[in-house]
Length: 425
Image (cartoon, rainbow, N blue to C red; front, side, top):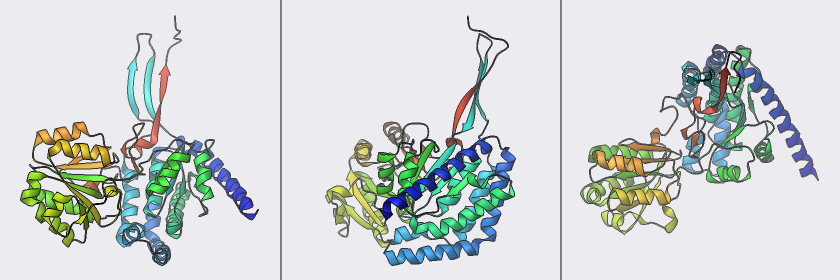
């Protein structure tokens, strides 16, 4: 009985949050671009001024996470330092400085009837964001929703609760400074998992859900949500080193794609080596990865290149490790690489390393990942690196938005049609 009572309280709390967000969305949709930008810049100022408070809150989260035994990669996702706090503030300013998407004319034309038609960008309404351990999502998601004229309901994970609250307080300070409703960016105050279930059913208040987290969270959202979802289930990113790859470029990209931050969704999880490249350069590449601390799990051909490569289990291909572990396989050319990625990939980000334009064109045309790269690290699969200032997530679905979801992707459109007493015959 107490549990049912608690859940009723959570349901009532979430409905109140939803109603406030819906009202705030109405105010935001007509708020001038300059006012929304002022809130973002003031929020950035607050993050910088209150950096010590944010780091102290993060230290509490880190201590609890270590006690729970989180992996080093997960701890890295959670950890904030002065540079990452500074980057959050810079991200808010970058978003504020972008062209405002709301009201932008996407197309316009005049019909023989005399009707003048414009298709213009408009906010989606209320965006719900459910995320796990990365506290910077609080700043990124709040900023992008505000820039695009949407109200945001943010539900961070229990691991990052103190950090997210400290960052959210700065965003609300920015809203107050710009005379915008504080309900424009709300943080769900409870760690109760029932709040997630409520959000997934709040069709009256939430227009789209964006989950950011592991396979368990995203899978649950996709299975249970009655609200539309922008999501990717996993970031099973591949790097394929073609026979025409430049060996120095390839080595640098492969190392960065795996080791820069192994716990992010853009980290490479599988390395495919074209057999001629493997014979000429594979041993050097594998040695460099192992020396960098990567555990390699490969097929017989890759293990022949370096005895330290462990045998790959059947489920190591198509697996998101989010750690210093990488699957390796030797393939016979670009077509076999494409077939492997089509079978095991998650349509997130895949890369070809080659100086052969024809091979690159084949890779780009035959694969349907949200992001395809040539001679560049998969770690660039990020809205900030794409010039969006930040991202609310990476979408791998086929409808509305794909790849990094920035402010523009958080808008829909409407048609404005003008006549002059025009009637249809």
